[in-house]
Image 1 (cartoon, rainbow, N blue to C red):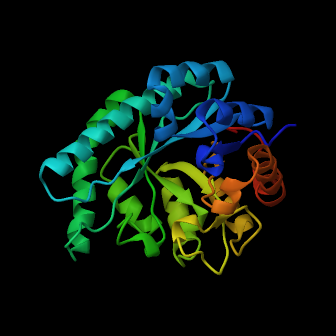
Image 2: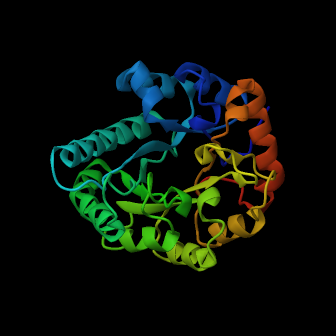
Length: 292
């Protein structure tokens, strides 16, 4: 079996697969790349995870995730900043261990409004302040901090950054190699300004990752688990993929799905269906190779 050369399986799509199984299944499915998550890496230890990744022959497309730095100044915020510094080191280690073409990209989710607060603007300002603290560490490690805007339904509890434009505003004070953005179709498909913002991101070289999955209604009770295979919902992947390609992004493309039914399915079947849906819905609009 051979998957499209730019397809990366985000590890969350087979969430319950242990680290070794995720690597094995991804490679057996014909993929060249995997998007890793910090928790499965921590379960085996960073050094051991890096060794196993190197043995797999897979590229790493990103490490998910860190961020969550909207808290006001105090011990909890300091702990969050320190955790982000550790995540930067992990990203650099894993990217160095992956096959050639691996990306040292750390996906950042901003965090929600702190408990007891209604200060949305203040929470967003603290995201900017955190980036200012972390950018020197990322630059020294050769890591790109990739701000991921999340759909507005997550603004209160997960991400006060809701649009690609907001993410770019936060990124622009920094070098593009150090702070970029994630274009995730699930989160930004609804935004009437999104295609202009994708072009803006491309012009400044800030697209650090392109993630794809679909949106379908009705949403489940837990809206975090509302993602679907590309082609099973309402998102126009032709328009999005062409826009990202026109913006100059030529890296790996991750399929990242949070969906309990998909998580409960046989992992090998999920790997195969992910590849087939990508080949049918996304691949026709892509250049063939990473970096092409």
